[in-house]
Length: 311
Image (cartoon, rainbow, N blue to C red; front, side, top):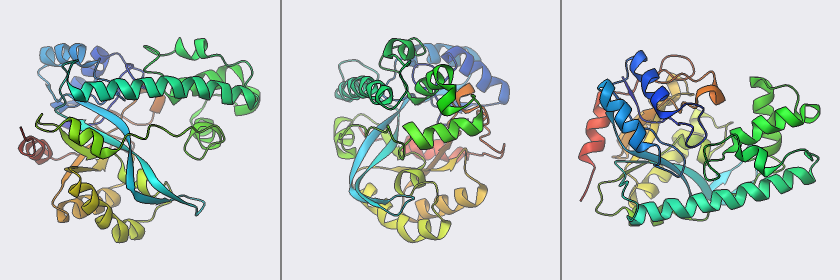
């Protein structure tokens, strides 16, 4: 079993790396990539845990970058030039002095600044009992604070606004407040996809766009829209050095996975996949199995990723 998209508590997951590795071992995962947001600080601990369990670990990270060539049509019909996309990077260099790591530092600093502003914005919108220190205490460090930590604090301190902490209200909170359509949403960095590709040149890093339909179309996208528009997007991404598209995504149904895999192969790119496991922060998404328990990432995905590395 393969899972190339998951998060520990070094970003916005709930599990320690060692717990994550044990969990992966129990369900039969043989190859995985821990793709924390903006950081590889969890890698040494995860590597030690995986080695002891006989699991192959691919050094990975997930970053938010700008696709300046794309136009996104939001769920409400409005259009956005320049789309914020999540990009998975595999076989990443972990040496602190590497230019790739320097860009990760830039992203972490941007995350910290944005989180401080988000607290202030939420306070102005009635969440007066929220403090940055309280949210920071829920994360591993100030650079790993994510929106799930904000959601926890909002449920705890302001149930009169967001209701009790359950999966239905969790999604409602994101939609109304801190998700991409929320009242307190703050856009992420303007670093471009090209910036990261250039920083990793010659290092053997392979890039894949995470959950692409969420990035480019929104949650209301139909398979017909995806089939019509995604080939153009893929061609543009490929021309700028992106090698893969996440097709076998944990929260999608089999029809969408198959459609994306066909389009990706037709574009001469690599279909990648993973559960996007976050532990208790996405309690319905299971490591290795996804939302409905039917996730399957083919063995040839890892073979293709290895073959795509350039030095």
